[in-house]
Length: 122
Image (cartoon, rainbow, N blue to C red; front, side, top):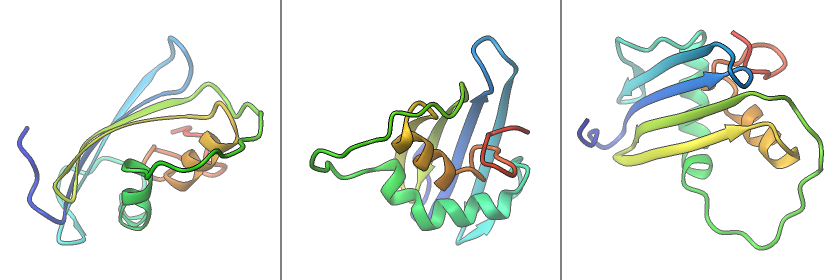
């Protein structure tokens, strides 16, 4: 795969509902802010909206001072997002292991194949 043109989105999502569980694979492709053929997410328009709104902050976070995360467990789901976002290479892992990770998951739920409740269930 080569770098996408600026303002393009070409992402692959691998979602595992539980260890050893069924693996779901999705793609999100867009050019000029519009979905392109080949997007396979259950709600691709919502996924694109989430990526355009939060992608920079989620995929390329700036180092932050110490932050507190609630120690709660949101489930065994794990998602890996790879590809290209506005010409930058993406390789992000999402889980639901604490409050901060659950918040990241909910922010990008549509990209991760999420349905109501942001569980990642498809």
